[in-house]
Amino acid sequence: MPRYTTTPAYRHALRDIRRGTAAAAMIGLFVNLLHLAMPLFTIQIYDRVIASGSYETLVALAGLVVVVLGFQAVLDYLRHRIFAILGAQVAGRLGRDVFEASVETTLRDGAAAAAGSIRDLGDLRSFIASGAIALPMDLAMAPLFLFVLWLLHPVYGLVGLTAALILSSIAIATEVLARRPTARATLAAGNVHIETAAAIRNAEVITAMGMLPAVARRWRRSQAEALDSVERRRAVAKALASAAKALRVGLQVAVLSTGAALVIQREVSGGTIIAASVLMARLLLPFEQMIEGWRQWVDAMGAGERLREVLNRGATRRSRSPIRVARGRLTADRVGYVPPGQDTPLIRNVSFQIEAGELLGIVGPSGAGKSTLARLVVGLWAPTAGGIYLDGQSTYTHERGSFGEAVGYLPQDPLLLDGTVRDNISRFRDGDMTEVVAAARLAGVHELIGTLPQGYETRLADAGSRLSGGQRQRIALARAVFGEPKLLVLDEPNSNLDAEGEAALVEAIEIARRRGTTVLVIAQRMSILKRADKLMVMKDGTVAQFGDRVEVLAALGPRRAGQGITPIPSREGVK
Image (cartoon, rainbow, N blue to C red; front, side, top):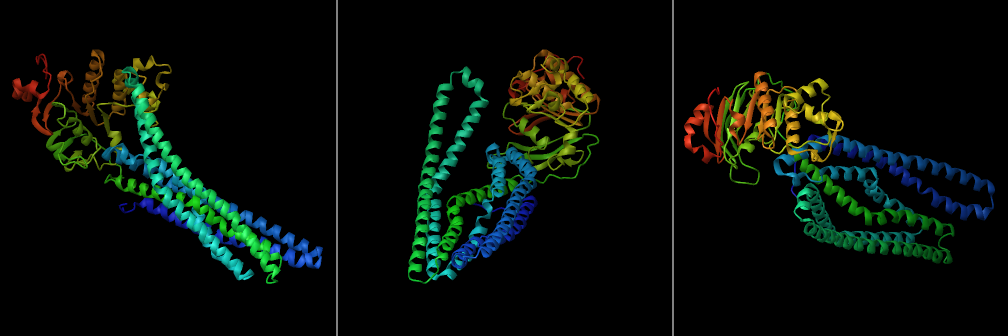
């Protein structure tokens, strides 16, 4: 697996883990030392109390052990609390960075690149909070119990050492034999999850076109493969775990038999038999836990490595210092863009400038790079060459909070988030209701919202899938114009609109321009660009024509149809 440099958040999380585990290790040291109380108590009971018949000694020893056990319980609780707090602290430390890095990675490399990162963070927190992270600490105390067994008699120590080595071998065998089935199970489970999510997203098409039986058969095959892989892994792990449990009982029998033989030979006292049995149980406990815990450690380390990868892949050059956008002048300077993992550029040497309050229309055939340019303009992707600047600041590196307050964006396929209509229009800010209604009126959707069950408080689920395409597009337009942005980028905003909706869109664009908003509109139909100040024609990722709208249309002449542009019926009275 490739190595990556660590981000500050990841380094701080590692520092927290080191400090927390160090504190827990100190407490664990005393907890393990206190585990010696019971074996010592047993020896004293058999060798002193029973032999002397002293009730006073019995009461004193019992009282002392009760105090020790109480203190041990308190320390053990404190150790568990440290792990619980540490798990929450690590999740809190990494949560926002992982979420933001996942979004950035998804924008650049696709959803699969960051899939499961939030689940990995939850798994890492559970691993720490459960106390499984303490396994090496408990294993580190094994020499102490072996030493005490050796003090009781070297044969006890030899039996304990042999038992520890046998259980360690089983743990290693479990990892080796279960590694491939585990990898196959993880991959198969991921495929099932992807297919399920895709089927749910496309439920309408699947049902309408009678694809459900075929899709269900494919899903069943994937599920069967996943279940088979899981069952193979589980069978291997359970078989070895069962063998380990049976072996542990056998080892307890071995230490009791050894003790009996030593007592018969008068090499040890009878009290050492029970003491050795208790010590053996405590010695072997972490080795038995290692059989299951090894996999937990491997999974946790894998989750940590994936989180580090996502944090580094999602790291950006974006500024964290807010910069207010005062005017809204947009400049593109020799912009080029090559998608990650590809050699062919989608955008090549694109340059233009539009002043505050101007409307730039971008037209061209499908695949010309229009939507790619829109994403570069709003800073979703970093240009491979050149740059795009809003009031002199890069749209990609601009701090996202202040940039978002100054920019409105309506993508080609507008999606709404789960929440109320008001939440979506206000961009989930604590926006004043007056501003929300003003944006809805500007987008011509205020009356439509009034027909919804709870009006602006109507909850939208599944990205607003219960609304029509035109309704989603108009609510998304209201979201774009909310807060009177300085720059408005609209990618085919009339693709799902009827004549009434398109008229409202044209009016909204005109009002925004009068307020001084810079507007960039990508369109296939020239009907919404009749008032554009400038027109840019794109073809094969480059600028074929750019300039004043009337001059560009005149220069194109009969070639307009070949550029994928729908002509304006008449230019009379158009400025």
